[in-house]
Amino acid sequence: MSVQIEFVSAATLANKTGAEKIRFILSTVRQDKIIVLEQALTPAEEKELITQTMGSVSKRFPGIEVSSLSDAPAQDLRSMLIKMLGGKTGLTVVGPSNLVKQIKRDPGKLRLLTNG
Amino acid sequence: MPFHGLFAWLRGLFGSRKTFSLGLYGSTNVGKTTLANRISMDWTGEPVGTVSEIPHETRAVQKKERIEISVDGKRLTMNLLDMPGIATKVDYREFVRFGMKPQEAQQRAKEATKGIVEAIKWLEHVDVALVVMDACQDPYTQVNLTILGNLEARNIPVIIVANKIDKKNSKPERIRAAFPQHRVVEISALKGDNINLLYKEIAKTA
Image (cartoon, rainbow over all chains, first blue to last red; front, side, top):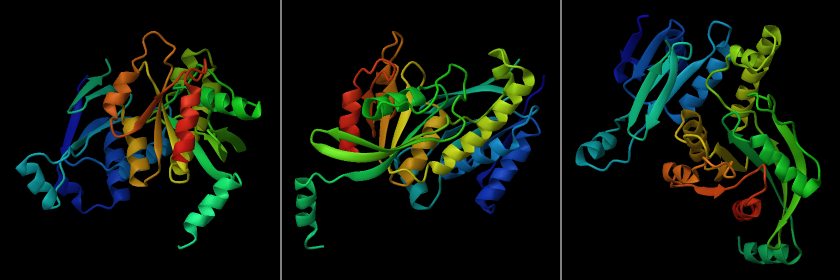
């Protein structure tokens, strides 16, 4: 079974509202694709993603697996500069749960296990 | 307010009661309803809900209002809110594996999704949150992080409950290590171990 992974740049989502962002993620995931966002979702967006996912659950689409590596506290000069300029680091991975069995997380690492 | 201190002193003197809402949050099957029942039984003699090994047994917010507790001379009145477990997926086939008929399983899944949405909506409306985690499981899940992230964003006081410490494979220290910024109380809701420590922490926080 082939697995499609889409990497989405921060710029692609920059002009989207929160609701548009969630719609974009869910429509991608519902096409049996795994999506990797260059910029991590905020807790509020994650909450909205779960809420919208619950509204989409069906026999064919049982839900999602999601995990984020959020902004670590800025410790080095580069991270501090990125933060000062309004930039964000981190990433979010979202996949359909019928394809992604689990996303295991260590504080600084995500490991994605697929079904089959 | 110049008389604030005086009022506080008088309230303390006459044993005033503060009312607050206490929400129990967490993933499925971490022991939220067992804990809600423990709290409610201890102070009212009545349970809140039924417990089951099948996930999503609690599919609507269960409330027990006006529970009066007294800890170290502090008297409090709380509205206890036992939330449905939050999850990112609800697969009806999981319920079938527990012996349910497909139609019944699909109905349960539908109700579970609504329960999750309801629990998420309530995230903004509790005064104190107990985030319950199974001390035998990896605490570093996205559900735990999302719950905590949203509570922190709204400055809602959080107490993390490391539950199921009566089990041999429990490792509550993993929870402490994962969330060093929060207070963690290690308990067994089933056996009642350390439950008084939790009451003290609630009284301190509310």
